[in-house]
Amino acid sequence: MTMPQVGVDGRDSYGESVNHKLDHMVGNREHGQLVQIDRANAPLPVKGVGNNFKTPFVTLPGVAVAAHANGDALGTKFVVTVPSSGTLQAAILPDMAKQSLQVDFILFTADFTGGTDDAAFDMADADRVNLAGFISVSSFADFNDSSVGLTRSWGLDYVAPLGRFYVQAVARGAITPAAVDDFSVSFIINSNDG
Image (cartoon, rainbow, N blue to C red; front, side, top):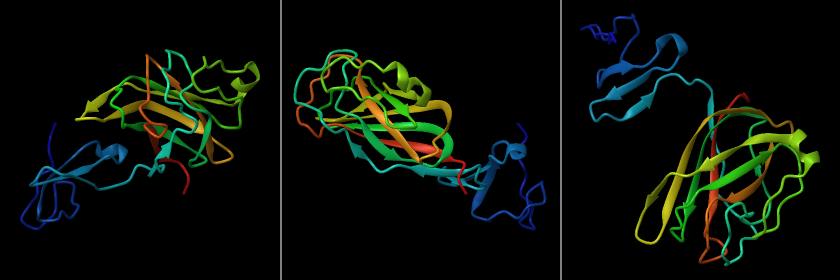
């Protein structure tokens, strides 16, 4: 890969001015994905390729302090406000009980028949027309008595005319929360909204 060279006049080899504190720019110039790398190796965005949007953390509602089996609903359905269209990029799952087990988030664009906590989740046939997709959180960083799960999506494009995801969490493994508020989730989205 050829790196743009910064000349003495403060311009790179593409003729664009460059902050003198920055070493170089990397990325795909044609697709607007340039990132400047400073001397401390901290990436700084140069051009946006959309608008990043992060939902507030939502505590999974209705979670009982009980053993949840693989495939059980982990709490009851909940709603998250999202851009009306975009690409789901990631999900962050703080786990205060350090279960560190996979959780799937089933996403709908309209209200649906939610599951009952600690019972097998079964999507109703009529709800599939509003299914946006799912994202699985299965990679965790473990700490003393908690963990954080992060999963990058494969880039799930969606359209949510109501500006909401209706969500059901599903346990993938034997999860036993220590408290009713052990799990919360936030979604990171590249928004198509202006």
